[in-house]
Image (cartoon, helix red, strand yellow):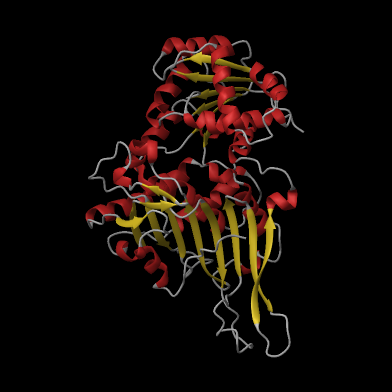
Length: 491
């Protein structure tokens, strides 16, 4: 196993993301022996803490967020010993000088600066890192989403970061790309001879991508209202998943080769604008209802809400690609808050056989053509539906039968968190699972056109009851094409 030597600095080190995800991921690397003894970790934020106070705060969060059975006092003691704290604000030159004093004894070591803060602070932090002499050829910066709220603001931030760091030093994170099932999608396609010959419009009827959340905006209402489902989920997570489904095989598993193919997919997206905005999209906003048997407020009833808000908490899109492989194959995207369950999956619906020789097949209520489901959460796995004979004498009856691969059952143990994978890649300087600047530009262009069409056509969100799968218009979006959303309970 490779032992990583680096100095890792988490800006926003006392924030929610750092406490829930980043430090637990770093702890897991400690637990699995991935760090060299010389590796150091620094938390940085504007609040005042001593090293010991910060370690205590992390320990309290660790006991809460690290999965049961994985918090080990002996491991934590070793982990805590490599952690220090620096009080620094984005525009605080003195704080950056203190950070420089702590890092200057190892000027040639790899440095990873993780910006787990508001993107509005990114430019100041990058500038002050440079001014304090903290940006070296071996430095890398990890940027959390959302990077801007439209194409113009995204380009502004990227330009400011690009004045300090070279493109190969910039790691724009999308944690969905670190999920095991997402990475297995590439393996499934490009390491198995049986799927790739069928991965085209001749054999695939349509693709569904669903990212559903049980939670609402809750304590993050102000942030979420500025973003909405389109900016928060579609522009990054869902378009990245679409790219991995639709991309051509790269000539080699290289960071630029993979991302070149993703850019081609984004360029092939058919524009959605004034001419097709009504038929290709649905906006929704949750109302009060029940999720998991618990009554929950509507979006406009959440704490701190503006009752006049027209921000969408649900989006459904019928997307198409203008290219040779996918011409005529719709990609249905769906994401929302306050849905019945936390549920993310990719469904590849294959076409039916060209001629059905089993006469009872079409009359069966549960008959279906072959379907491949890649479950991203909550339980990573792959689910392939085949038609088999129902046991018994008499007329041949078909029964859909699932071949299930649960990663937890097949490989045992825990499935690594996405942030573990991506942090390791950032430390190693591997950009493959991170988003390149031109990818972001093209994705924002497509999303901005939709947002502008919503605005110019006065399309406001349709209400949907919390605990349902969104507005009825989202059902109509897919059923107009004679298809239905996959809403199986699980596998």
